[in-house]
Amino acid sequence: MSNLALRTISGICFIAVMLCGLLISPYLFALLLIFMMVGMMYEFYNMSMGRRHPLSRWLAITAGVAEFCMLFSYMHWGLELRFLSLPLSLLMFIFISAVFCKDNEQMTDYAYIFTGIMYIAVPLTLSNFIAFKDGEFNATLLLCFFILIWFSDIGAYAVGKAFGNGRKKLAPNVSPKKTWVGFWGGMLFCIAAALVLGLSDIFPYPWYHCIALAVFMDLGGVCGDLFESMWKRKFGVKDSGNIIPGHGGLLDRFDSTLIAMPLGSIYLLMTGLL
Image (cartoon, rainbow, N blue to C red):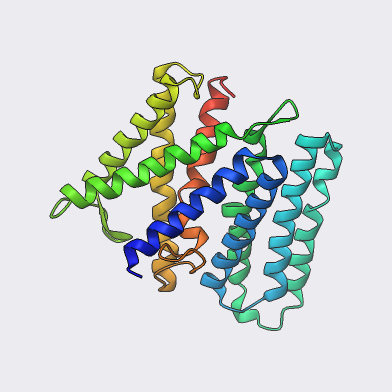
């Protein structure tokens, strides 16, 4: 099977899984986000630490999943707010494991462990605030966020491929293939997608808020993509994993989301739209 056919088939399956997880039920949403969190944190820790400190990194992954479950329970079932502090106790055991670590030459690994929590677990956990409103599950807005990010990626790739040869690079030391032409192409595609969502009333916002939201999310997506590229360049890897045939790892596919989604949410909160 050619690489293009493999990427197409796996891409279709990937989108189908995303739609099922975001539109059918809150429990599929929870399973999807937990799977994404575990997969991305596992890839990040493998990329940055290899097989070192298995106990500490699984404690970090468990803490992230537990916090997601607690916030999900709070939003969906009205769990008492005080229980949200329980998963944080797992972080204390990471400090304990560091104290008793025999390999003190690798103490910088613990910076990677906590980076994985802040970089991956926190944004995905906070997505519960987007997926629930007044205790009711409705992940349409979250799906729209993904649509904006996907259109930004498609636009950047298509316009960059068509018109970017020989053009000025966006961040040559981090991602040599990205150009400013591709960046503006991604921005235009993202804005166009936001306006279509606005005109179809899926986004219940005025047109200027649709444009502003698209700009924020496109900038966040580009930063997220480049941020992951910095990690891969530092550790000398091409892909964070190989779980999605032809596309690489989960972190490769959702790197943009980890910064774009919080930025989009902050914009809607600050303008009183969320």
